[in-house]
Length: 420
Image (cartoon, rainbow, N blue to C red; front, side, top):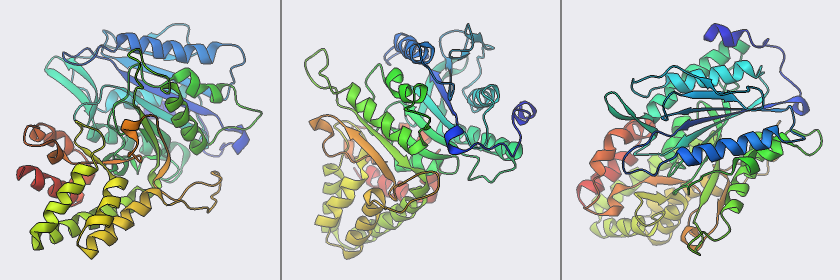
């Protein structure tokens, strides 16, 4: 496989900005699992949207769209608008791991003759469950692609790109990793994916079925205005806005379907990582010294919950609440520091991305009063759901994050959960 992709392009054929093409890859896990909403209908609808926008009149050769689905019998893969039929893949009863998604990325980039300067987006589609995605039943039970396995696939992809093009790890990243899945836009995941992608698109809350409107999101790539090719930041902003617009109308029950979607600049994830560590340490010290401060901090966790029933806090809201109410000067200062990394803009201009912002949150969309206090990125806080929430079940999967093992945040929230 590595030899195949290495033959697809020469190291020195990086295109000019106006000549760059997009490779869009949608990896779909639709296995039926008891207790989860069936996904086959929505998978077929989303595939139909991709087919419609690419095969209708006027589609542009600057975008290549691939999809692969699992969990509905024999897996299948297709290059939209090129392959006449879905290509059947070998059926596997083994556990879900990094290899199928790595093979999909390799195949897509090879067939599209993807060049080092072209743009790429990989979308993971399916139910997200306890920090894993694409649940399916295997011979040994139920499995899913967890964050460790996904990072391993991207690490292998990056190494192959480096060998193919003789480029640095920075240039061998995917441009965008997107998740058509629930509860994904977290600092933990941003930190995990930062070495392998430039941007992350995800939601802090649930994604209503049928998910992303692929025809609307891909339309600008398929039919660009003039010769200009959208940059990753431009496409990410466009996708966020189109998604939120799609759910602006009332649902069948006469109520709005609350949605939120965010574009994160992963270059800022290390700064947020460091700031979150300092904040967690300051909170722990302040609470150890002052029982009143512990009560204040617990109140701010509760006030910053993303949405009822979710074990997450909105990080910007949490930082704002701490800066207003904490009795500790260190906590207030470090909360302000983290909050500024999330939302403070920069007007510095960088080559290839005009006006690329200086904050972690590049674009955030929301559509209903239930989402009014969301700002775009969350942190895990299981204790806010009270003693009835079985946070230990999620602990195994949460420990797959590098963030969990390398910062004090995990220890802090689990100490609070133990005492709940």
